[in-house]
Amino acid sequence: MKFGIVVNEGPYTHQAADTAYQFTKSVLEKGHDVYRVFFYHDGVNVGTRMTVPPQDERHIQRNWSELAEKYDLDMVVCIAAAQRRGIMDENEAKRQGLDGDNIAPGFRISGLGQLIEAGIQSDRLVTFGD
Amino acid sequence: MNDMADTGEQTIKKFLYVNRKAPYGTIYALESLEVVLIGAAFEQDVSLAFLDDGVFQLMKGQDTADIGVKNFSPTYRALGDFEVTKLFVEKESLEERGLSEDDLMEITYEDEDDDWEEKPSIHLVNRSELAAVMAEQDVILSF
Image (cartoon, rainbow over all chains, first blue to last red; front, side, top):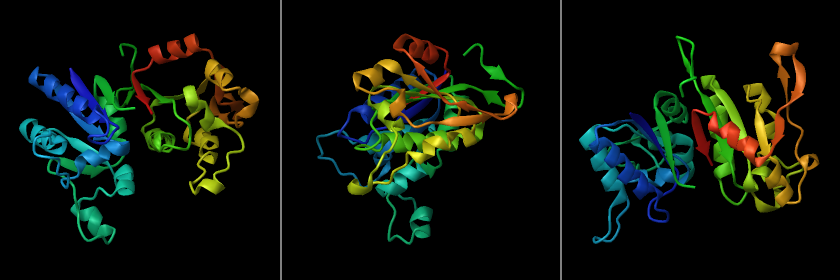
């Protein structure tokens, strides 16, 4: 089965990003496909490489980045939600005249159309978060 | 999903956006509306549901001047221009909050299949009717 995954809450405050990660990892391990993971609302905050949790805690962003690398996952951060919350890739930071970017490996910034497309192309679109 | 229409060129799925939160206080309502507007370009079969505190999103006379937040409620009235014409409002949620249909904005669309007659977009449904609407969807996005 082909899954689309939506993550609507940021890391650590809510468990949604963790549960989404466990779910995505499990379906991939079981041999299913994941068409795309889409990060929306505060979920875009999962995609900053600047998070430094205490060493004995899980590293949510790194978990996702490693999963993306292992399975060649398409992980998209919504551009409108990202701009509100200061998540920038190199191009966008330059375009906005900002002095740096913070997007994590494996994440890319794109539009909401990618969410709709995930809904159209996936057999099941599964949402995590409020 | 079995009755999903396939026009050959393009898949048309039934999308339902479920709005359950008050318009201000959190960003969910505004960012949900942004998805609806962008999604309209994909020419899918779109419906919106308003339940729980989500019914407040359609209230008449919203005024945000004193909280420093943009009043985005006029956008709901423009949904018809984006061919988003099915807004289901749950009756019980209105009643539980002491509201009635008279408290909601008038939202209409021009029906191109009926000589562009102006028709109401808002449909009041009870809880079990809304459950039936949900059951027939292909994709549900809840905000």
